[in-house]
Length: 311
Image 1 (tube, helix red, strand yellow):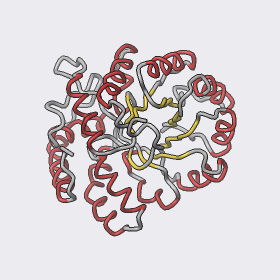
Image 2 (tube, helix red, strand yellow):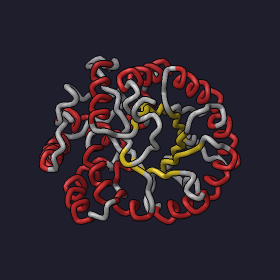
Image 3 (tube, rainbow, N blue to C red):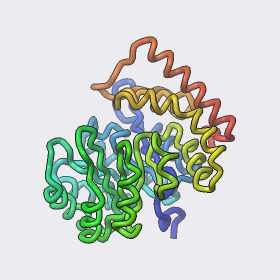
């Protein structure tokens, strides 16, 4: 059995961004370096191409390509979760199967939120995807404009889709929902949080299974997760407080978050350049200076915690 293949997802499971060249083409060598960084940090898995990978700016062929590159570089040393988002369950399933042919370990699918759909409609969308693959699957519900799926829906989906193992939620005031989902599914479904770890310290005591942030400070959040889980909360809060200004600032706008994430990876020496594909946000000069300032602080905080960008 290759290392990492049999492990449950836990702790920090970072989203790997897609590096682009100046002409917006995918920089495969830079992508391999990011995957290697994730391997060196000992994460149980990585996920791509997700929202944090700008998946919505990639062609279908490019989405297949980046997973192939990640699988090749990971070489079984960590699990690769292939995000297979599409508004059509038929197309999403075909994409998921292609990812699995290319060596992905798990499949992730986002709940379609372009238009409002009843929970019965969402169940009908998800079932053929989750039951159409023979690997564990993760469902992501990112719905800033409305209410996300609840404990009853998760329980129904779990009962009808045995491969459904993980749920990623991205919303505030989610602690009660986390507890309700754990109870309704008897912990069959492990809940992971998004939002760059904004609610991490709040949710860990309630039984949070993990968090899926960007790669830039994932090692720092992983250390915090371990400290908080081990009841070393004072240390966890001290380090978290140093990362929080970045998390809060970047959370103002998703394209701003992408800008900040790539600038942080560049500041840590993991990317040579940090372009996002258009359409993207171009921060004003004051914001650019502030991003660089807080990134310097993040790099120093991580270094002080013994976390280099090399291992």
